[in-house]
Image (cartoon, rainbow, N blue to C red; front, side):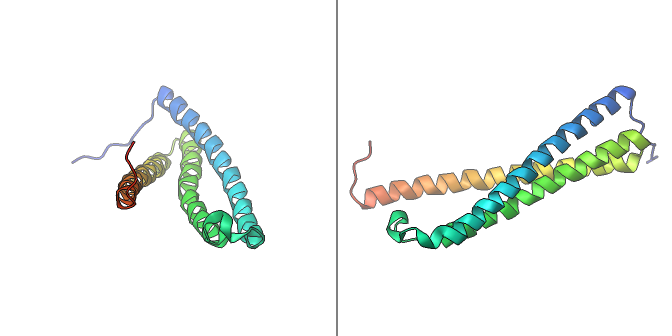
Length: 145
């Protein structure tokens, strides 16, 4: 199969450039959110020992801090994908570089793939939680609505 050089039309360049700017905007917002999440995690772990355990059913707030840390780590990946994609979009338009177009599309795909997988995991978690709540309610003899 013959390989052709990809040439972006001027209209396509405008769309890629615009997408890159919006991606950078959201990557910056996500970075700011990561900083606030990290500060919250530090606060939970640091000050959690001063809150009575009875408030949280005997669970230490350090466990909540650990779960929050996992959320922060998960949040880093889509942020990186957006940053990389936005940078590649800008370079692709400025330099008319096909390799940067591929990089833009690759990181954009990775961002949406990550979001899709995370959504599926969360939906499955909700289904399992709902089933668990129903089973627990039945086991405790509680009337269902």
